[in-house]
Structures are given as structure tokens and as C-alpha cells.
Length: 397
Ligand SMILES: [Fe+2]
Ligand SMILES: [Fe+2]
Picture 1 (cartoon, rainbow, N blue to C red):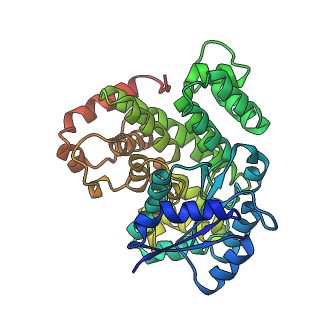
Picture 2 (picture 1 turned 180 degrees about the vertical axis):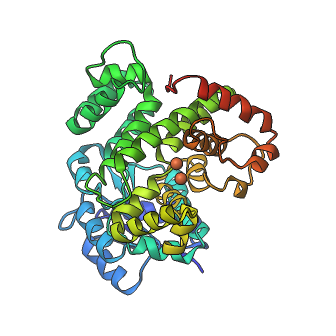
Picture 3 (picture 1 turned 60 degrees about the horizontal axis):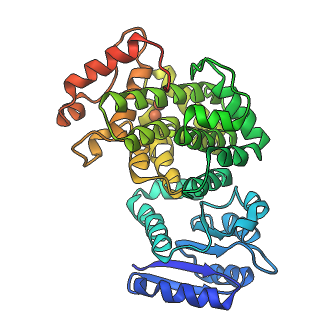
């Protein structure tokens, strides 16, 4: 069956341009182009679509208002917004209802690739239970606009570290969280960091970017109240896993890119748990507590209760955010790395091993998949990682 895409833009010229640049996809996608939010909603009423791409600034109903409605009435559609530099305030309004932000003018190839990726993700999740589960959720996490702004700045060759500091400083809540974390023992910095620009220069742009993403993902669920589930314990576990995954990737002398991806995947590897706990507090709490009481495998219990486990949910949702494929794979497969087709070290390897090491207490053997590590010829390396990480406190430097 052909995938369906709905494009919404009030400017006739832009719509025509989109029509032209998307022509190459007409054999694969059924595309509809409308010039207002009202028309988009009327169309969706009759024909649900896989992906909606909308302009931000439109008379009558703007992109933020449109996506708030689409999120409520057609939650299965992936929502991508095209916004310009002047749209900061509107961006903030649609943080909760938009899956990805693309900056305008958008290169047609980048737009095609983003839409394609969003569709592949829909298709790759064959698990009908997972799709139903996600459709039942009222509170899907969305990618923070601050993160999109930082990415955009980082792509600008003229941008300086101060510019990123200024972007972060615009969000006092995020600034406070970053400074608190940067000054905590976790990063082991020798001097007090008191502003976002210093934080960026101490930790590096990639780490800051990952922190913004993860702190936001977690803070969307700050009010979560589920018996048997602690958000702060999960955040601490995620930080330790991220640091260990980064260290393992460094020990493997992996590319800088893989090291960074291992860090961000480590931070977000259990994000699916928060999503489940927030959307289904009673059911999730009971499931986890029952598994603990019976000494049962919590992953199996999640699957039985929801038709998918937290890794499936996290991978699916972070894929919607447009995170790089290796990061999404690391999150989705962190408990079952053997399902990965990769034959070499990837962020998945780092996160799988890091998670097992962080969980292994008091010198117990980490519950990692030795067959998988041996398949990658990393059986001996795992012993080195264990020694190295148990020897000292894990820091991210
Ligand atoms: Fe996990
Ligand atoms: Fe974990």
C-alpha cells in the first residue's frame, strides 16, 4: 500500500514548489497539498494519513494550532513542522504536539529523507500492539525546540560557542538544570561553572546537545507518580549508563561520532520506561511490582502487559524525533543486541554493555549477551571494559 503524506502551506508558490520537488516520490507516496489548517483537518477527517508536513506561520489556524488538533484527533500521523527563524514563540507552543522541526527553507532532498525515515519507522514497527499502544498515549514526548535551535546553530560554520550559550540562556529552567548537573560530582570538573557558555566550552557541544535533549525528555514527565517507579533513580541510572557507554566507545577507539552517539543513546536508552509509566501509571506500576515480587523478567512482564517492552517504545518514539539510526537502534535493541545485523562495534554494543555493567552490583557478572559480544570478536574486550569501569568512578571526560 502506498504511504500517504499531507502538505499544508498557505502560500501558493510554496505549495507549488513542494509539489514540484516531491514529484519524484509520486510512485511511492500518495500526496495531497492543501493551503490551510481547516482544509487539512477536513481532509484528515475523511482520509487519515501517515505523515503531515505543515508550515508554521499561516493565517487563521497556524501550524501549532493545527498540530495540537491533529495530535488529539489523529495521533497516529507523524507530524513535521517547517518553521522559519522568526517563529521562536510559535515553536514553543507546539513543542508538545510536533515530532520534528525542520527549518525553512528546507532542502527538498532533506525533506524527502525526513519524510521517508518517518515512514520507514512506521513500517519497521510491525508490532501492531506497539502501534496501538502509541495511539492510546495522550502524552507523546516531543523534541524540544531548544535542541533544534542548537542543531541549527551547530550547522552554521560561523557560529561560536557563545552563540549556543545564548540559546540555552533563553530557557532559564534548562539553564538551571544544566548548571546543576555540570557542577555535580558526576562531571568531576575542578571549578564552578556559572553560565551556559562556560558549560558548553567545558563539556563540548555534543554533550550539551545530548543533555538538552535528555533533560527535556525527562522533565516532560516530572509529574509522573507510579508506584515502584522513580524518575530520579532512572535519571541517575541513565547518566551512569551514558558515561559508561562513552568510556567503552573510547576504549574501543571508536570514531568521535560513535562516542557521542553512545553517550546520547545511553542517556535515553530507558526513556520508554518513563513514557509507559506516565501514560499508564497504574498498569505500569502493577506490572513492575508484580514482576519484582515474583522475581520475573521485567522485560517479559512489560511485553505481556503492553504487547511491547520499554526498549521498543523508546526506539520507536526517538525514531520519530529523527535521532540518527545508530542511536535509535541502540535504544530499541539495548536488551536484545543479537537482533542487530551489524558485525562491528556500534553505539548499541556500548549501551548494551554499559547498561549491564552499571546494573551489575558488587562484582557480580554483568548480564550481557556474551554470544553477541563474541560474534563481534569482543569477548576479551568486555573483560577490559569491566575492569576499567569498576576500577574508578565513571565520569564523562
Ligand atoms: Fe532497559
Ligand atoms: Fe537501563
